[in-house]
Length: 118
Image 1 (cartoon, rainbow, N blue to C red):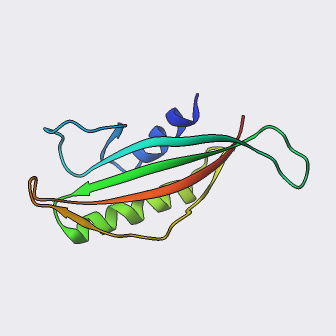
Image 2 (cartoon, helix red, strand yellow; image 1 turned 90 degrees about the horizontal axis):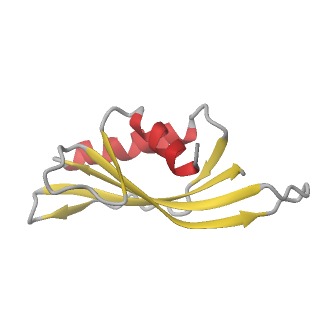
């Protein structure tokens, strides 16, 4: 299982539609879209050489601002309290909600570093 598969599985536990890279215009809301941005080898002070650090961008979509904020919290909890072998760190605590007037959908783009063994 790749790290993309693992993240997809973890996000699906939230109970909303999850898409990799892009969502279709007809997507049912709420929804989550994610993509990996970088994938770097990561060393440690203990000398481990089998670690990776991948930066993921995760976008949450919902019909109201409060529902979108709740979905963001659900994503953070799913990633932080997963039972699969990776650790998560949030590089930016933005939680900035945006509104798309063309689609009448609220959304937020969050980025996470995922640390895991190869």
